Image 1 (cartoon, rainbow, N blue to C red):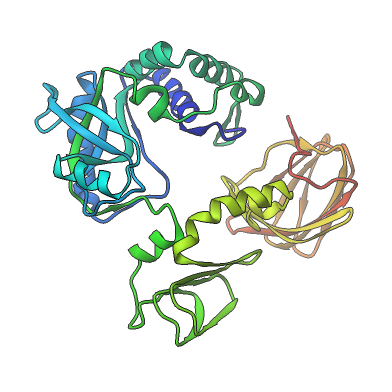
Image 2: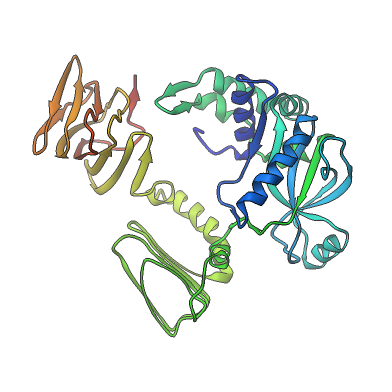
Length: 383
């Protein structure tokens, strides 16, 4: 996605992509940050729900509640569907209730809305056409004008940006007459906050969930996560979250860990790059990691997997110097192709067309020094 447009646009473009391969293909939409305790049970439930999807329903998985949670939407279960035993129609979707409302819904047999969906591509496209035509038109235009870049299909940014920003729940699921639900009872968490992360991890004798190089004294019920070589120490705190990464440190109470979203919004408003980019960014060809950045320069460490190749590109505002640390680099520079070996370097002037390839059988590692008036990632013109 060129930008965030919420789940409706993402589902629409994925469905269009699937439909071009097979209009009746069954599409499974899943959240990226959920934890499911019983993988075989999930697979069995998805296969059973797919029977309802093939029969024309837009299926979701409804989780049997284990508590009167107020952070989830609920589903009232309707009559049985003809497509697949155990599948039901959705009587109604219910927004996140208060505590008393959640208790009533559970007493009535309502389910948690997992946010997982299964449907035939042609069925979802018809519902998008009926209920969210602007989203469908924008995403279709974005896919029509997309460019294939290695393993990525890069959507047209202008077209995709015209898609109204809304969820698939509001755009389609709450309006369609074809909504179905598969009740399931496996352990599930949407891991929406650091508090939820603590809940699904193993705890030590003090109730702490600890990862990495961590030492604590008189600390209880806390999540302490320390990445890389960092040593994180906590003394005399209870029910806190401490997360140390190479480029940022988060300290919050578990009870208020949901406000991290507000914190990220503030970081973006103040143009902190950490809000949207990690130090190490993974790509189909390998990864790069920022070492240092300052006025008119940036230094990166780059690793290219054997056979990996970056796109042919140029920059308008910076020159680059590549120093090979390990392996052999095949460098395309304008009309020439040269091999650069360990302890050798090559200079890429501003505006030059260049590409990096690893022709060897071991990972290629190099140091990149960027120098110029602007070193942002959006100063990349791919050809």
